[in-house]
Length: 262
Image (tube, rainbow, N blue to C red; front, top):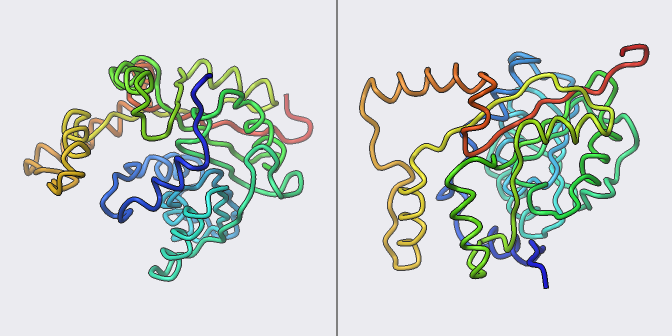
């Protein structure tokens, strides 16, 4: 039987430990959004599909957007509700199916997801729903694992021995994302690459030691000056197209054309 990624995997993940002890998405969704909307999201209506912890959504809510966080895992929705209670930025948790979104056509200015479509063997139904509920002139962000990375090799080995945290997962290139988006009437508007920091080796070591009661910090240390240089360089290179085929993750920003646009 082919391996799958099921709701039970996500229930275990979101119940496992404090989300503050888990790695975030390095602000890449927020950075991508700021490239087309700037810092003022007042009046924008946003949907995160497969929200998980919803941390990207809280960033957008903090800039004034009305943000809906949809997931099918009750543990995810409970986690988001808890974060809502602890923070000033709020989202609107919604239980639902990414393949049949409970929203009308042309509802949102932005639809996005990170760590979602790679877990489904027939992911195009999700992209079709993204295209349906986003407004003409609105944006869809598809953020996925990038194919040409050592992470893919390690992941495939762990899946083969049934040790992958999410059960099953695939990967994409930027070109593949663009073709899938175009199939549903979305035009490529921007993209970004993401490289892992701290390193994959450090993260794997930290994860392996956690069950033994050894809790390494999220980042072991930052060299003053060098860290700032590295971050500034990464922020420039992440938008260079050839490098989108080298990162651990890749994101496509697609736009739904308005009536009359080619």
